[in-house]
Amino acid sequence: MATFKAAYQVLADSLAERGVDISAVKKALKAQWIETPSWGYADSGTRFKVFRQTGAAHTTKEKLQDAAQVHKYTGVAPSVALHIPWDKVDDYAELSAYAASLGLKLGAINPNLFQDNDYMLGSLCSPSASIRRKALDHCLECVEIAKTVGSNNISLWLADGISSPGQDDFRDRKHRLQDTLHELYAAMPNPMRLLIEYKFFEPAFYATDLGDWASSILQAQKLGPRAMVLVDLGHHPLGTNIEQIVAFLIDEGRLGGFHFNNKKFADDDLTVGSINPYELFLIYNELVAGEQDPAVNMDVAYMIDESVNIKPKIASMIQSVVNVQEAYARALLVDRKTLKEAQASGDVVKAEETVLSAYRLDVRPLLAAVREEMGLAPDPLAAYQASGYYEKVCQERAGTAAGGYGFDGA
Ligand code: AFD
Ligand code: MN
Ligand code: MN
Image (cartoon, rainbow, N blue to C red; front, side):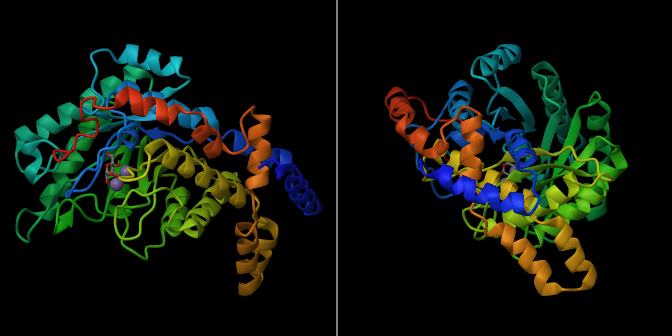
């Protein structure tokens, strides 16, 4: 990376020729805010096996320590999402102060409506009124935690669904969800937002109550302006055009958040950009178009939702943050004037080439320069791996209690 200065100057000169204000691009890159998930630092796995990692975090404070490493070397990951009860503590104010001592804020609060035996037939959609009450009370507990830690986002993923035809009535479940979300939303003080996450399948095998962006936006629109849709990249059937969904949600003013990851087959929660970096760029192309559109008001919570099972967690999280930064940088460098002209004239090849030419840019020297201006090492992964932090925590955590992610099989 020491040679990045020469490469940076070549890139800067070529962008200047295009009339690109590189200081504005750098300013946007420095302002990027990518939340990481507490659960991404703990042991995770599949229904077949959890391969425990010596250096994995077990307690919430260990997760925050690890998340602080990601922010220390990338400079753009200043908050950590919590998952309740995996991150349940007696004193959330103290936990928030501890996070602050590490240079972190506590971010989105994620209720867990999928690991209690009572939720076998659903939580907020359950046919049992007492179980819906239990699930709602848990969500209201998360609202109180959010108030205590100063978080403005409740990220709600429902595993609710039905696993065989005839098990329950589709519309009854939709109405139960409408009613329970209405009570939850009413308990959320302004400006707290409800980010409604959808997933097309699993763990239910026949139908999922919040299975696509339509089911999420329908619920959000019935609730009010602080109910938004959360897009998780791993939550779509193969071949789905996610960037089109993103554009539509931006246009409706209902894009509330992202859970970035990547997948080869399903909801694999792999390192962001590790399978399909072009898709990630095309998503960011829509995000930047929205950001730069004065008619659009965007307030999007960007979070990485990954659980890499056999890679070291912190290193993978840094890879993910860097890949998100690079996608954003390339999207900021799309020549939108030329693109609009090519689209308007129906010059299909020129329009595609305009998008592709931004994607083909090597933006690593630009990001290295940004990091240097932020007082950071130009290569965050190399700097972290050379720091000895991982070796230190492997020694400290060897043999400590399991847990953290909450898998029964863990
Ligand atoms: C699982 C779900 C969903 C949710 C996350 C945290 O698929 O993505 O956001 O757990 O609850 O990955
Ligand atoms: Mn998610
Ligand atoms: Mn998921």
